[in-house]
Image 1 (cartoon, rainbow, N blue to C red):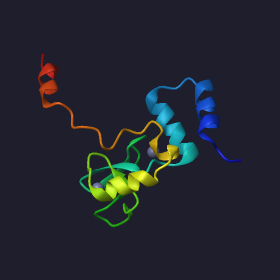
Image 2: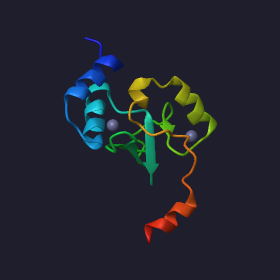
Image 3: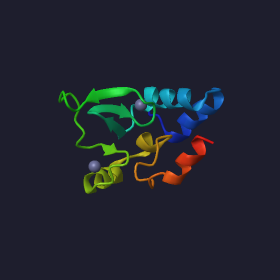
Image 4: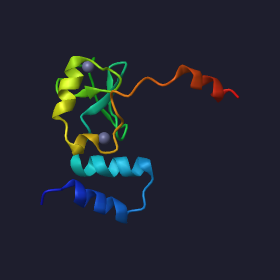
Length: 108
Ligand SMILES: [Zn+2]
Ligand SMILES: [Zn+2]
């Protein structure tokens, strides 16, 4: 049985999940997003935050992945290949950087 976006959203509707649980369920059903975060070589899924691999140890291949905040041509080309399975509930990897001024409101 092929999981379609419509079917998946239908399932999610029936379950009463918070955003974190929902992301984990989506990844469990359709696989991790190809939109990823990399911090100190450690690769995490941008949707569910699960650790997927380690680029420093060479155990993760990022050649078809889109790195959040990277904004390079490779990432943009890879993004064009992504499907709803990658994009659903995942962050926009090319979002503008957050306004630094918002940092000030934190300490208030
Ligand atoms: Zn995931
Ligand atoms: Zn890139």
